[in-house]
Amino acid sequence: QVQLVESGGGLVQAGGSLRLSCAASGSIVSIGAMGWYRQAPGKQRELVATITKNSLTNYVDSVKGRFIISRDKNTVYLQMNSLKPDDTAAYYCNADIRFTGSIYSQTYWGQGTQVTVAS
Image 1 (tube, helix red, strand yellow):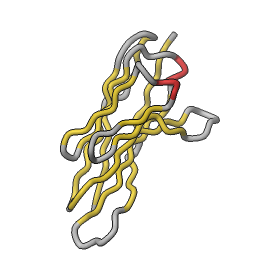
Image 2 (cartoon, one colour):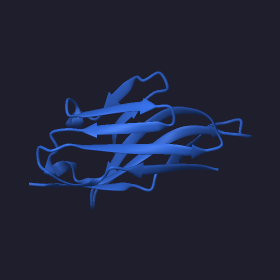
Image 3 (cartoon, rainbow, N blue to C red):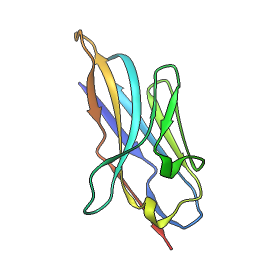
C-alpha cells in the first residue's frame, strides 16, 4: 500500500516562511504529478501548486512569486514565503502513484497539515 505523510505546518507571523514536506512511501513503482492543495474553514479545497514528473510547475495566482514547489525522489516540498493571513488553511499534498502489481496510477492524498498565519 502507499502512504503520503506531510510535515512542516505550524503557526507563523505574517511575512514569515514555512516549508512543507510530503513523503510517499510503500511499494511504489513510479510517481507522476504531485501537488499541494489547501482548504480554509468554510471554503472549498483549492489547488495551490503542482509539479510534473519532469518538474514543470504551475501555481494559483494568489501564491505566484511567494511559494515554490519542488520534488526530490518520493518527496514533494512547498516553500512558502511572505505568508499572509489569507494563506491560513489545512494544506494537503497529493500524488499520482503506481504501486507494485498495479497497471494504472492512482491519486493519493496526505492527511493534511495546518498552516496558521497570524496578522
